[in-house]
Length: 320
Ligand code: ADP
Image (tube, rainbow, N blue to C red; front, side):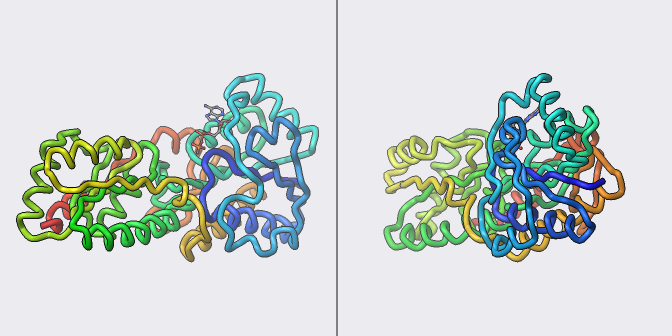
């Protein structure tokens, strides 16, 4: 192979730039030309390519977001869109593509692979919701950002003896909420995988907590449950305790990646290039039991992942 492409797709995540940098430089080291494809599959269909040079990725390792931009591209969900994408790759002599993104982006990569373009996926999402891997680029930075923000809300919550509902991201998955729940010592954690929508239980728990002498009651609510503001109004009415909602929102997606995100993004980026050089296609890179491994995309997308219930149980035990 002579030329590879790299794109970021779906939601952005801190550490994506570290992966792009690694792909560009590992590619150049292996005598490949590397083309950056801007704005994900949307940019592919528009032929938005940039030649990536070693110096062009200087000073990006520590930057959040993605220097290539990202987008959601409904056209790529259609067969015509996918065929056009493969044709554009061939016209531009792209022999292989690295797709950094989530499950949706891997479905796109799978389609390109089926059309004869070698593709490798790298899991990039703050949500940690990719079944085949224990780690996804951006999760570590996002949970650290959310954890620090929650510490700050907790300070003011204690001073005013309030109940605080803090909504964290994660789409349909509760990983960010669960990790913050443990890291911040939350009194309640509402996870889409586990929450039974019994608000009376929450109300009883809050009342009991304040009777026990607690100065605050922190509820971490996952995006997949949402409605934190109306929940706060109902809880305040039922408990008589001042209750506020804070929705952390997109701040969780930004910022300089943590050491872990930089190191794993870098190793995953290099591994993707190595696999393309070996002629591999339709693979996803993953971290499993601490090892850097790769799976067939079809198999990876069929895998299921469940929230670690023991983590949730102990959060209940410690919230006394
Ligand atoms: P993520 O990769 O973070 O899960 P999305 O689900 O939004 O994000 O997917 C990103 C993009 O991947 C979509 O906008 C679309 O272009 C492409 N994509 C998603 N699902 C498919 C599919 N089934 N077939 C082809 N392309 C897809």
